[in-house]
Length: 279
Image 1 (cartoon, rainbow, N blue to C red):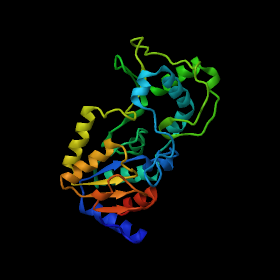
Image 2: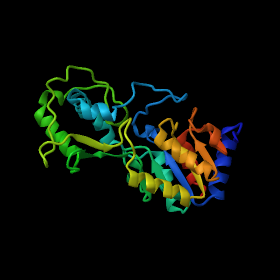
Image 3: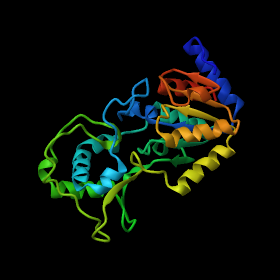
Image 4: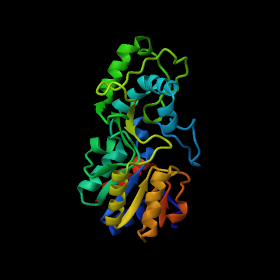
């Protein structure tokens, strides 16, 4: 793996990588959105900064877990819904617009790549602004559900807490009286954000689209991800097994460090903006 001694040399090496592989596919992670005010889960060693996110099986099995999740979301989701694209999102959209990227597979659920203007985006873990019924598969917009939750739980509306990743908040309380509605369409189903929770699986059709995008690409660029979650790591491993060069722009350790042809430990937004200005 090539690791350059200076920031400028790393930037030049990344520019040469992008120049060499015009059908370049990006795999992006939480580090792309931190400059938009959305916290990430892991530190530079790839370790948890906070307790792991909600587990899918626990959410589905426990009404108390769902009460806690939705109460905290009333506080935390405001930061996610109000976030706007940062320099990394805008730079990647510019690179795509100039024909330098074949697309983006993002592990993020914030929709900021699309807001920035990227057109070919696969949301590997879904989109946080949508809610799905786990019984009838009905969809509704999350802001609509949150309005209902606020009406049902007026005293929770004004609570404040530190914001966590993916619309969570560091709120601890007795959640026993928090009211969570069932699906308004079927009257029975559990409502869950239309995202892949920890311990859940990426839907088969979406995974197939991601693997097809890797097959069609010349090379891969990992941006802002430790790849500690298997769903992202296996995409990079698939590219490496197919003989496709993989580069990484990320500060700190990642799960795929032994698979990269090039790794640059640089500020993500600033570096992508500088790279986009060259093409």
